[in-house]
Image: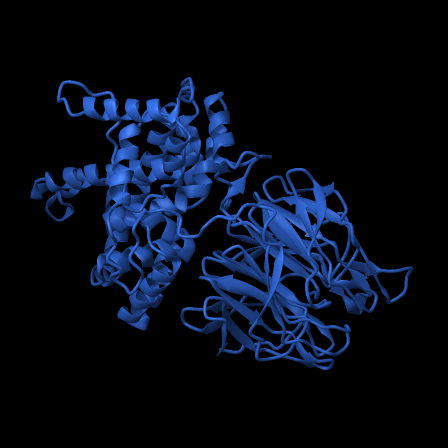
Length: 617
């Protein structure tokens, strides 16, 4: 299924109101966090966030440049927040709950009031922060946004956002920071939020507006000036005056004018141009920004495809697992020699190309898998002391602290995990004491600390790797028992799992059969890296396109290896550790792969950029 914003919007305009739920799921956490940062009340923020989406749907036909949906959505949110603030300022004191008659209050109002009172220490702590730090902290922990996503929203660089987050954490006491994290975890939006909106809009009839034909640039500019001039008259209004918040992303609107289209909301472009001309102060040590645009330049596909050596990991190891939180890579566990498992955790900063030792994982193990939900890393399964493990341990990078969680029902090693909609799916693996590979899929809900059985993967296997594109999990490669022996037979199998329907389907085989590989998704492509067959490691890199179900060869990596791990930061893949011989020669090596494009941008023929489905919550 295609999931670009424009495609979903067209489905809505053609009468498929349920498709709007994809856009709500994609952006609800960000909108909710932004609204909360303005209102400082969870209950009101949820109500207003819902109103934002309903208003967006009702006016969807007015959106002329579909790729600017996010900027338009934040414009609506900003406008509604201002209206809400004005309405609140006009309320007489007698309307406040402290002065109201008890009989005039229903139970829901009282419960909401008590709930908000319980969070007063959090509100007071956040109010003690300067606006830029409070906003960054809220978008990070309540909205679940990465530093890069926050940067695109507020018009700063990712480095500046990281500094703001660091400063905000240092300003809050540890106890208050922990309370803030806990409070935000509790008050995150539930799945029913999307359902309520889809129900509210299902009977709304919207029709697409005819798209304006492109005009020559000179005429387009002249027409724009004429329309802008007309709006100066108090008697003539043909423009939607919804303001754009100062942090809205701008590239889509700017490109529209350069190609000669005239959007209906042309004054919004004028607002954006005015904002773009302002100089940022770099108040938190970040650089001054002369124009508000995506801070990362976009490279066309087909360029790049290059490898670069980076700083070695301090501890040589294989069978480890790595995950990313806030732009940092955390290399966890593994084995440091054939018989010794480790609990070591080392943090890598791609910006400074440096490593830092962090708190050890409680359980030493290898062949584990790690995944991230809401800024926490979950280390799952693995192997230690001759037995498979079901252990689940949660790591909080902010506090550098580990916490034990509910064990996985089926202990196994060589599994792979991926996250969709806040749930972790533990897939496949090997159970040595039963001499078998597993097709088991179990779903973990970190919020409830509970596990649930899901549909088995069609092909039993271990030492596979999985990743997510457009809400679907792709299980790639791996091994099973060859000819009833203990030897591992490498597989080229690719199977796609849909968590919504709990179903699997077969996809095109990977060209090179292998196990002990890693796969990493950049944008809407998956890169299968290294691995091997029998005792022979490969350098092979192959790229999979789920939309076309096709594979193509990419540049080999410098070091033939398997049993490594890989992670993605800012569109670059970092391949960490591993082994050159499957039994020893464990590696410290870190190699960075540039696939040749930036995630978050899809390039079509002719150079037009489309906003992709970056995240399905």
